[in-house]
Length: 410
Image (cartoon, helix red, strand yellow):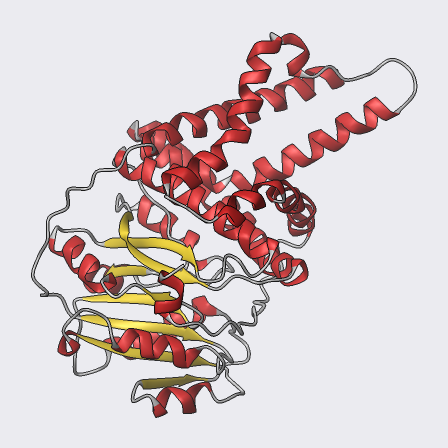
């Protein structure tokens, strides 16, 4: 009985793994032809900030120098429950500091919802809204790429998420490697298949008419994923702009990283609970592969949890003296098939680095420490499962002050 349950669960995980691997093959090639449009769209650039006095100045300087007509975009820094000099520094740079104080509704999702209401009430209106985090740096041509997609009728656009500090520690290196992998073999593959991409929390662009119609309504701990699923439900598929780069600061210590990822996983469980079955039923009813893919994506957090529990279950069975109670699916597969699966799993990350033209030997060396980082997802996800009802937002402190020229020269 135990073996049957174990094998059934393993088969489920294998199916999802094979499905994702099949999708990733469509990310091996990228289409370089893109139609260019003259600057036309106007942008409200929103920066979500909570006690970001150390990094906000560098981002504002960066945004003010974007390769886009200054008259076509304005910058608004959401100073959300700040107790430091974030608002003061913002004003010193000649940018709109929008101060919000609400101790009961803390977090980026609430801050964005509040800011959009403020934005819609202003005399000047904008064609689109772009969102960044205060620790980001942005490629100079970012708004040009957003303008191109908006002129082509796109309504929700996700830029290419990169890291600004990949060589600071083995933790930031692991983040960078997983970002490069996801950009190429998760996001680009879905774009090439005309399926929905998924928002990454920053470097996002939204058509203003759509935002006014839908409302933000995403106040979970992972507001980006929540809004992505709301869009897919409505048949509006976010699209990746592979050329529009935004650089995100990543925590340097395992402790800070675990705290950040715990928040992500808690929010992800919440989204899975609310959107998996509605999207799955809709995909069956409409015969819609994109909605099916989105449903599968929502439960990726359960895949991690289930993989962890099955691994522990198997290890315990092996450690107990006597005949094994559990039979693994791999015992019934030819050795060469198992070998191919293992090799494909190991090679996907170095292949992603090669495809993304990563030249740093240190990054390739950090492939050796990457498995440790990936394994740390297991206890984090387990703890998140038991604390998923916790909706208290936790702030990740940002201190790495870099300029866009420094990041792009590496």
